[in-house]
Image (cartoon, rainbow, N blue to C red; front, side, top):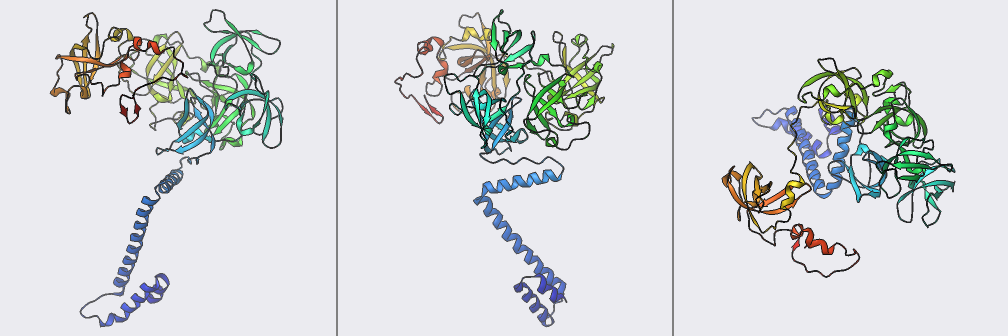
Length: 584
């Protein structure tokens, strides 16, 4: 029976060897070798051969197919994370059309590549301020799901095929092939309409019911946004807006260029908007007020919601209520009236934040027991009571939360706290004029000494970097020393950094204390200076034109003659030195 099992479980060569050994067992002299020992040895050898061959294949695979191995490791990590109950990591490939979150707004772009730290490089469709691409965490990226149900008269932002920029327009008609005829609000001398594919269009919320004295934000194409107040309503649907701090200057604005200021929002207000994008934790809703509002998954229904897409879809028109407003101008919305903060209804009185004036003189290192009153997507409001009885609510940002995780993501604050929970906090800052207070659960960190002002370094700005100055060592650090220098006139003094590599003419200095001590008088020169940042770099080495960037040492007078030259005019130059990153 044992030999039958051998025949059925082992390779033919190994099975034949086993039978031969068993047959010759009787002829073995002076040895007592049992059949179990023989079979165990054969099995060990069999396993060793498989392990050895697998190891060779793995090593070869790592050297020959490194990118594929990395992908398999990443996939294995994702499977393990899902088996522990974590979120499944989204899968993106090079060239995928996506929407990614940047500065609180979702922008369209294309996946360029995956970084080694798990983030993705996203190239934006319309670069902002020269930022062509950004590294974005996968949880803040969504595959582009294009809205398809456009109808005639819909307000949209569309990508112009002529210059690749986004402009406002109106849908005229659909062609049935995924493209729509869009009429531009301002053709600016070009064609009045273009046929645009639905992937190059976004539905936008346009508010037309502005009233006089409404605070608004205006953003024209290719111009910075600015704030103002509505002072008149025109019959053609436009509005006259007085620009803030402009001494009465007014501008006539189209409602497509306007958004309601967040200062006009109040918790509990009802607004109508459109679902812009959907993610696992919720959705972003455009109500035409400031940035988009976050609709957390806990505020989409009265019961428990499993999937956001079971309740809303991209482009859907929804009625929402303001659920909370953060100190940074961000706000949350709810599909359920009366569901505020982390999802529990609260009375109107609970929205009063109290008088923060008594907290202005409180030591920031003193601890208090506070009560969580409201939860918003980027933090929580905590009620703090002083020993004298004064009470006020302070905002605790996610960066100030000492939770079960090192990093608390926006939209997950309700996983750390419950309404009514007691927390240990300290007063971080108080703004009496704005009636705002911030609190923190993290330990107090002594603020750094502010850098010298521009006025302190201004007297040293015209000093040549070849001129020697007398200085006194004030502080010694592992990376160098801070030296106080006097101006040639002796009327001004300022501190600059003498880096460890700028102390000796030749060789390497291991310890600054081997050469310098506090109070020692030294002879230094100014190597570089940034007046606006309040930084000055000093050196004890002699001047070397081949090792220092001369461009940073030219004064404003030296460069003044180049100021009026057109950027299209060609000049003759001479290469002075070559570096790995370019040439001077």
